[in-house]
Amino acid sequence: MTSVAGVTTNDGILRRLAADTGYVLAGFPIAIASFVVLITGFALSIGLLPLFGVGVFVGAGTMLVARVFADLQRLRLQASWRKRPLYKRSEGSIWSRTLRILGDLQSWLDWVHGATILFIAVITFSLVVTWWAAALGGLTNFLWDWSIPYGEDSHSLAWLLGFEETSQNRVAINTIVGAGFLLTLPLMTRGCALLQASYTRALLTGVAEVRNTIEGLRDQRAAAVSAEATALRKLERDIHDGPQQRLVRLAMDISRARQQLDEDPERARSTLDEALGQTRETLDELRSLSRGIAPPILVDRGLPAAVTAVAGRAAVPVDLAVDPSLAEQRPQPEIENAAYFVVTEALANAAKHSRATRCEVTIVRAMRMLGVLVRDNGVGGAHVSKGHGLAGLADRVRAAGGRLTVTSPPNEGTEIRVELPE
Image 1 (cartoon, rainbow, N blue to C red):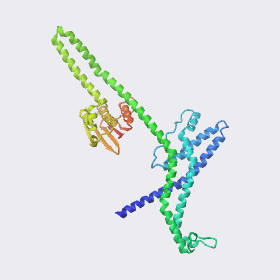
Image 2 (spheres, helix red, strand yellow):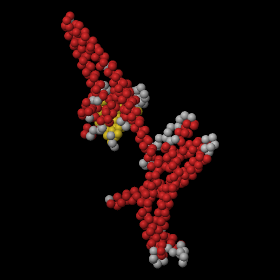
Image 3 (spheres, one colour):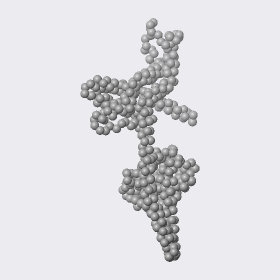
Image 4 (cartoon, rainbow, N blue to C red):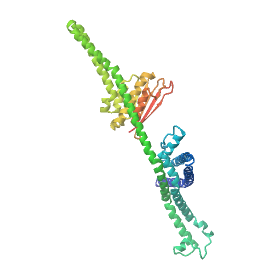
């Protein structure tokens, strides 16, 4: 077992050594090309500025070329960076698009990186090549030492260290030196690769990550505002169409009962009985509305109990599977609310629109993500767009930092998948 572990460790070191060496060596020609092209383009744009502003367009073109080199460098960093940064959108006239490119911060960072990475690439390339040459040359010295003509004015490292100038001493010293370079080669290549990658990451992904985070938070905020507005409009409509109408009728029944009380007590009693029934129905509707806002069972007992109650009340039979760990270790309240909202709305939509005869609800937890799957066997054709119920659902999920995917081919049912971060 020890030998197997040792082989595995050695294989890992060799793979890392090869990857670091390839990264540094490949970066050198890319750095030369970007330096030559971007410096030339920048100098040309400055020189052409007096010529009716032609230099502005040349400068914008140079920035676009800088983006190409930057994307190539990001591709080389794909193990730690998988998203392209957000550049300013180029819309409008040619002049406005050109100025927008020149005014984009990330474009300038791309240009600075392409114009300056050569200085770091020269250092890292030289060190890696030197270490590889010293390691390979020292360890293979016994193969070619005989071919070097040593004379009175040329001496080997062994002689400089005070040893007698013999072939055996030369080979021994050079082999020891080569072994030393070989032992430190993984550390040297790793350090050079990290130096080059850190500089690239700082300029090409650091600011971009912040901007992407800001854009993501802005989208979440907009989604939260939209979801809140949609929920308020729905609540207002439900109250107007339901409890409010019943309360108006209740007031009319009580007023009529007062008028009938002296003339026809039996009829007044019948009217009051109807009013009592209206009161109970109004309370039931208010409880139903409150469950959609902040259901007590969700607050008190958690998501498994809440979705079990929803599945039991659903108009369509539901096959329910919920991860039991959600009862023991509950997610954040906003995540629970979002998941509950997804299940309730999806089941309501299935009952109203899909003509489904069966639904399936699955809630799982894996890799710090909460997954919700709602599937029915209805007519399909559902899609996320403004004015449809799923649009509010998507806003609610996006506000919680999650992602909603709808698959609904015609006549093949609807599948709603949601991923929520815990």
